[in-house]
Amino acid sequence: MALRFEQSQSMRLGQQMKLAPRVIQSMEILQMPIAQLEERIEQELENNATLDLVEREAPERPEAHADEHASENADDFARLDRFEAETPEAADNAYESTASREPMDFQSRSRSTGERDYKTDAMANAPARGGSLQEQLLRQWGVSEAEGDLRAHGETIIQALEEDGFLRTPLAELAERAGAAEPEMERALRVAQLLLDPPGVAARDHRECLLLQLDAAEEELAASGDPGRALGLPIARRLIEDHLDDLTKNRIPKIAADTGLTPDEIREGVQQMRRLSLAPARALVEDPPSAVTPDAVVEYDDENDRYVAYLNDRRLPQLAINRHYAMMSKDRAVEKRDRDFLKTNLSNAQWLIDAVEQRKHTLLRVIKVVLDAQRAFFDEGPEALRPLPMTQVAEQLGIHVATVSRAVADKWLETPRGVVPLRGFFSGGMQTDSGEEVSYDAIKAALREVVDAEDKEKPLSDEALVKALKQRGIEIARRTVAKYRGQLDIPTARMRRQY
Image 1: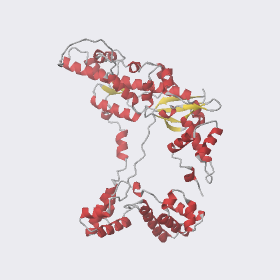
Image 2: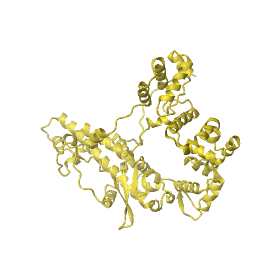
Image 3: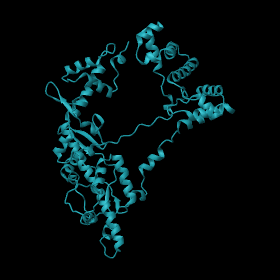
């Protein structure tokens, strides 16, 4: 039977959901934390001349912030939930809504007013970077007494160090790379370990790293003379040289049997080891802690016995449409090409203003629900967290669950109990024996409390932890305890035991 190819045309009527670019960008604005949103607004101010800064008014009371924004534009993100595509005509005519609003005074950008820029001041006052690990060590090596081939071999070793300061490349490979004999490279390594600071840099494993630091501690002790500390150093050396593996596995009885040391003497040696570091090079290039900027602040209202929230948006630039350009876009005396250009930019500017306002309103509405649902957390602490599914919040606010998810992503709250992630208030949970709902995070907090209160000489096994939690009305399986213990970085009972 012969095969035959045919072509035909047909029409089919159907519906298809598509996200307009503006809707996608609105979702992105909603999901941005405050620091990222600030950067985005600064970029828009640079690129869009129709967007201006205005002076901020006096700060509002937190209660007014929450109540007004919660009721105003309650359906701001309804189009996101319905996934309606925005028409080009709506985008082109968006500037009309601007022209119909109250006149806005023209405000030039703060960067051109001669006022002090807090960002510039912060950058000017920031300390200079110390350089990479290799740069700092090479500077130390450059002022050392090493000369000739020894200096060159030392530089080769420093360049081969990894970020934690360890030398994991075999010396034979480094010797071949430098065209030198392996004994020469070994000698350069010993000199580098002796001269470079902090002690322990250029070690080949953890044992050598600890011993190098111990050598430096003994030299310092010999110069200062501290007989109390001198008692524990020989024990620490013995533990590091011969029993490091047993020590990491908390096999204190085995070490005592092999060495003849008492548990108190072993503890003294371990106490000296606590002064040492497994990665001393981190002190040279330690990453600064990442700053967290809360998106909202939660405070307690004594008069009304409630918690109120307001957005931490004072650092955000307050935006407005440039009145001059808005009028030019409707002036027939201006060339059509220029008017079209202004309309496009005015539409983009108005969209950004609306998107930022929508973000504020949606975020405040979600936070208000959290304050009502998690009141016990703010009163009693993490153990009082209640299960709060996002679907429940979405149904209560009449928005899509995806909108709630974006609103809480990467957001932080400054509360009377510290700075906490907004996402942490949303979790599943279980029902206790008393019928009370408790979240999984509250179960973890209870587990942490039980472990902290245990007798460290007789730590609780996972099965014992199950029984201890059951006494609190929390009944979970042993494997669940093991899973939560791993998530909380709590060692096993054998590793927690103190002799």
